[in-house]
Image (tube, rainbow, N blue to C red; front, side):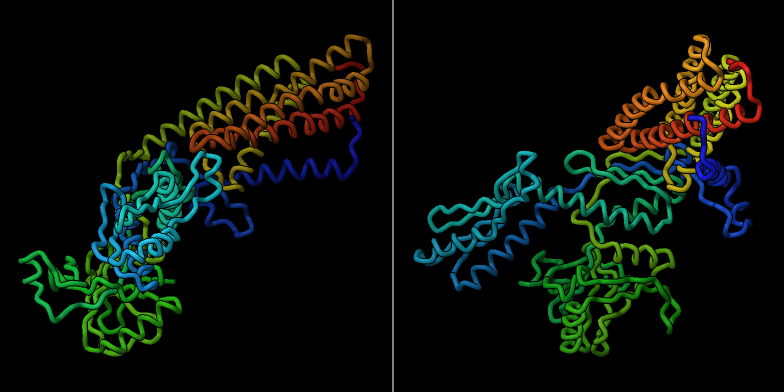
Length: 538
């Protein structure tokens, strides 16, 4: 146990030195690190929301709006299905309170045929939901005489809400990434809520505006043959038209064709820029192949007519088609500031949210509170470290010195690994490090006590040390493996701060076994080889 091959010595020392070098950047400010050469390690630990301040937002998805959009889609699918099969119908109606769409079939001979065709709109639920007890179909299709009803099922709604939440999380993540923040926490809570924690964010108002926007983009032709004032007065636009409020600064409302030319789903890119003629901020966009084809066809057929760019049911721009737009790209102008153009481009690139998100809870953690938490964590760590170092030094003398050196290397390895992984350090994470400091010497205590027992039994120095390390190994592994399993379970089932604690604890367990057993054994072996002691100084 005390013999080390040369390559093992080099490997142990290399790991220790690399850990120390990886931890060193945390002793410098970001400005000081920028002044250093590029080859010098520069990654630092990311501080969590509770350490550097930031925003804590709890959003709730508008389930009613999600159901309304779904019913609108079902309504259109029913119409298209019956027209495709040439089945006459009337009284196609949507009932949001009942979460259903109903239709009456004119010809009694077509009732069964229509029922069979409409049942194909009901899709079996994802088999992955079987384990949660959710089985069946998305729609319950029934017939009562000539009336056919398609009602959303509760399991179908749960699946729809779950899918919408997952899509919203990805959309929100893409939007927050545009801020350049590190390690935001974005996770689902309950049935229809999303928790957003963004450490280090300065402009919380902008964050809320960017995350909360639904971002649904569509392009519509403007109806210039009907009167906007008449539609406003009567509240009944002509069939196939809708009255949409405007934010373009030229008109308060526009009368638009309900059917969109192209939707935001066909958008593949959007970037902020400047108009070459007016030098005003604009947003340039580009469609996919299908969207470019439809956009080109409509603009060819409607030269001289205005079309509206609608974002979240508001017209942001209504330019006139001067010539066919055949390249599949264009630009959106609307008296934007540079930041507004940039935020709009982020919204369009990230995609639309399935439904609007409403803030239920908002907390802002100040930087001063975070600094106090860091200071308290440092004090706790120093007190714990000093107590452990003093205890091990008094109890084991020279061997305590070896254990303390290994403890310092252990802390450096933990910090270095956290820095390289760009993990987020929170208050529970600091607690994990403090706990690791206490646990780190536990293995050395087991080893040193075993060596002391072997020496008292009359064994030689080398035999006592060799026996102490070899016999304590199984106990050390058993204790640390069980703790490591507990840390993995915490990381798997926990969230946020619990995961931060599990990460530091897991890393600390691995580095502690390395330093407490391998590194101290190397130092003891080198001491025995150079001094050849006659007794164990414990």
